[in-house]
Image (cartoon, rainbow, N blue to C red; front, side, top):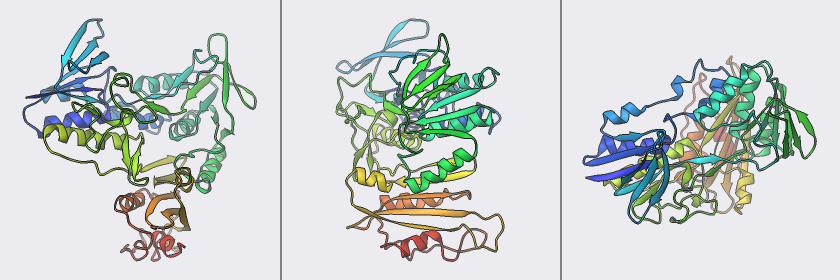
Length: 443
C-alpha cells in the first residue's frame, strides 16, 4: 500500500486525490487543508459579488465528505508547520492547537499561490482586501451592502482586477481601476485588443488610472485615501489584485526552484526529490509556445498537473503534453480569449514573429443577432509555426481558441491553417471564415 499525503486541496490537489482514489487500488490518501473549505472556484467570485449569479454555493464542486466516502483521510483547518523530507514526515497543527505527524511514501505539494502584497504605508488599514480565498470574497461582498462604502479602488488591471471592478460597479459603487502598466490585461493581449477592453470599461463607468503606482494608503483606522505616483484619491475600500507568487514555503530550502520561486518539476510533475511531486500554481509547467519550462498559474493547468501526478504515483507513466495558457474573460458583454503568446510577449521572450489580423462579422450580414469578431494569429517568422492567437467579440467565440491551442501543441504552421476544413452554416459563421481569412492574408 502506497501512502500519499497531499498538502493543499484546491483544484490541483483534488485532481490528484480523485485520480488516485478512483483509478488505483492499494492507495492510502491523506489530504491536509489549511482552509475550512475546499474546491472553491475563485474565478466565480466576481460573478457572485456582482450578483450575476444568485449565490456562492455552486462555486464549490466537492466537499470533505466526498473524499472520506472514498476512503481518504482529510484534515481541514490544519496548518502544515514543516516537512521533514529526510524522515518523510509532515508536521501539522490542528485548529484546536494539537500537533501531530503524518508519514508518507509520496508527498504532493499543492500549496498554490499567494497574493502579492504591496509593501507600502497603510497596508494594514481596515477595508484593504485581497481576493484569493472564499473568505476574501465573503468580506468584499459584505462590504458591498454597506452604504458608507461608496468609492472602491481596485489595484491591478489583470483578469481578477478587471473582473472585480465590473462586479463592484454592478453593485452601484464608484470604481477606480489602477495599474502601473498603460493598459489593462497586458499579459494576455496586444494593445489593439486591450484598447477595446479599456474603451468598454470606460464606457461602463469604470474610472481608469493606468500608468499609476500605489504609493500609500491613508486613514486613521480604515482606508480613507490612496496616494499614487500621480495623485491622491478618496476611497472607502481597496481591493488588491496585483498578482500572485508561488507558495513555496514548505519546500524552498529542500527542492530545486524556478527563477520565480516555483518548484521545478519534470514532465511527470516530479520535483528534485523523487518522493515529492508538485502540482498547480506552486509548480512550473512546460509552455508549448515557448518550447521551454515556464510558469502559468491557471486553474485549468492546476487540474491537468494534478491528473498527471496522480497517474504517475498510481503506477501509470504519463507525461504532460505541455500547455498553451489558454484563457478568456467576459466583461460587460465583451468577450476576449487568447492562447499562447501575444506579439508583445513573443518579443519579450526574444522570438521573432509575424502576425495576421482579420475582422469580420461572426455570421453573414443578412443574419440578425450578429456581432463583429477581431482575430490575431501570431506565428514564428522562420518556422511559421503558430505560437499564439487572440479573439475579441460580443458574440460567443470562445470555442474557437481551442483550435489554436491544439495548433500550438501540434506545431501547426500558419500555412497549414489556410485550407483547414471549417464548415459553413449561416446560423454559426461566414462562408469565408475569419480564421481562414486570417491565414490566407498572412505574410
